[in-house]
Amino acid sequence: MRLLEEDIRKTTPILCEIQRDYIKYMHDADWRVSVKYNNRKFVGLAVQINGRMFVVPLTSQTTKERIARGKKKRSAAITTFLKVAGEEIANLLHNNMFPVPDDQIKPIQIDPKVDTYLANEERQIRKKWVEINSKSIAVYRERYDKESRNYYFFNKTCCDFKKLEVECDRWEREHNISSTL
Image (cartoon, rainbow, N blue to C red; front, side, top):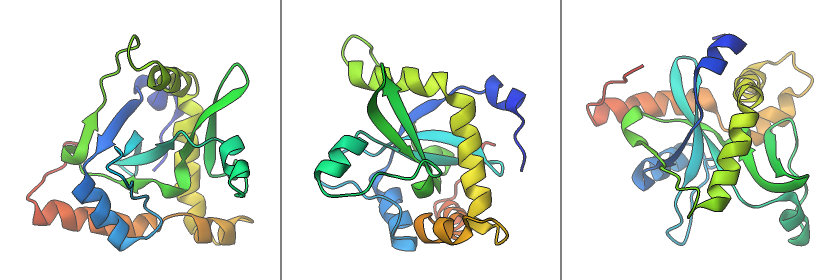
């Protein structure tokens, strides 16, 4: 399962949209899979873990906004905070990542003249790509490592990745999809 840092550097980050019906299917399997309401697009970052694609949700809700709503700051163990000039602009939620068949991933084409906010997020993701990918792998591992000092926290806050892998495989069988990896 080990992706070496050199291997990660050879890949490029892919910001993508995930199809609604697939997200709903995965949410039904694990309530921690985020479902966007009000017809908002689900935007995430595609990463490879265990030879399959996972999508890490990208949220524009910053720590400042969470605290203003009376919520706690997200844990750095399961979140990558994206910042520009020291100001947090978005978060990647590794605890809510889930496996995705290739046909459900729609890469986002960013026009930096129009999509300046998303372009900033993508730029920060590129800068921290190795760290982000490594954190995704670490979160996946710690979710199931009963010897980890954070096991109970990860077990409570993270999706059940292995269960979702089974559901992803089922989706692919039911929809006659073969993975390209």
